[in-house]
Length: 70
Image 1 (tube, rainbow, N blue to C red):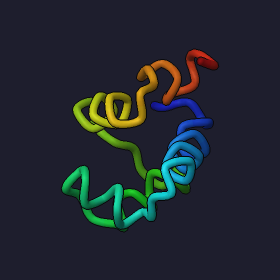
Image 2 (tube, one colour; image 1 turned 180 degrees about the vertical axis):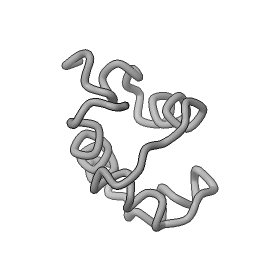
Image 3 (cartoon, rainbow, N blue to C red; image 1 turned 45 degrees about the horizontal axis):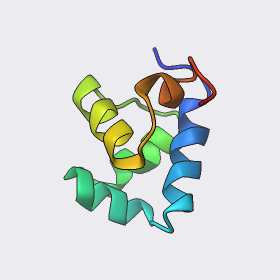
Image 4 (cartoon, helix red, strand yellow; image 1 turned 60 degrees about the horizontal axis):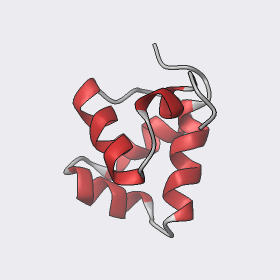
């Protein structure tokens, strides 16, 4: 289970890039509702998506899941 801060960090990183949920969904080849679910904590991405998110946003997986603050 991902730490509670994942939804907030994902949304913040997406907004810093001035992206809509639809934009991120298109980049990841998932549905907009999937991204929305991640941002509200309804569901969680799999490991491959976590890695893709970390690369895309230039942060560590540990940062995304709340194990590190950098």
